[in-house]
Length: 344
Ligand code: BGC
Image (spheres, rainbow, N blue to C red):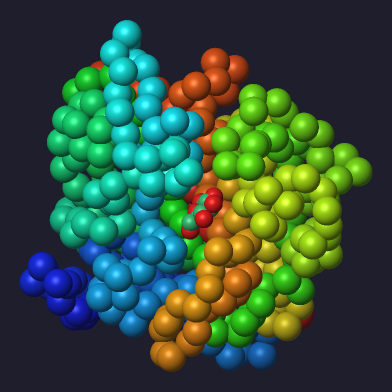
């Protein structure tokens, strides 16, 4: 189903695309920013819960700067010093985060109208043309993002591009999930699992030092489900630097696999995250202050948690980190799945 989703300050008419499956689950996405707007799922008491933070119309997405539901790129997360070298050339990016580049730095993909190049009952494909030099990155690229709602209660997101020059790609989805409902407040009592034996140590500006640190015996250990809030206020250096969880975990294994989970005892809703990528930024909304969200909701600190699948932050400056370089004419293709179920 397609409906109007507001008019941006540039006069662009945004649309909302709603998808439904046979199990009563629904998801909605908009062409403004290729953003994920709604995820509706019946909870253990058959009450419909919307478990993703968002805005009522495209205007909210245009004004907001906390990346609710956002498609982020060309390179999500941080590039130290906001520049990098590729094929012997230096590329300058915009420093928008303590002298570093965050989530593209400028002319963000989540602030653009995407073209709809495919819309079926259960899937929508958004495409943008990102020109050579866009945000400072080399190479023309048609980038497509496909959202699909499957009969297995999965929101499957596929990213694809073939650049015409060597460049960098690291696209992700920045949705904030709250499995007790988007307007229910803090997620600190909800539980999270991350299948990772290590995380990338970072400095005060969240730039990785290059060191992989074992999670064993630290508050970063999420190998078994535990409440997000259990150790979040600990004086462990990483948590002090991040003002909570805002780190990249070194995901165990490779290829498409389940890498994380979240669950709410209140609603029984469980979310599992699958990806083919090596890293996951688990971010607990530490910098949400007061965001006017959907249906009059106010989103504050730690009212949602993001599971941003990615190549490790600043990988372009660390030889032992995989990606995010993509060769001219070669395909950049990755998939992330958010799968939902309900436990009683
Ligand atoms: C970053 C946070 C940042 C947030 C912006 C996350 O991906 O790791 O540091 O504040 O995005 O919403």
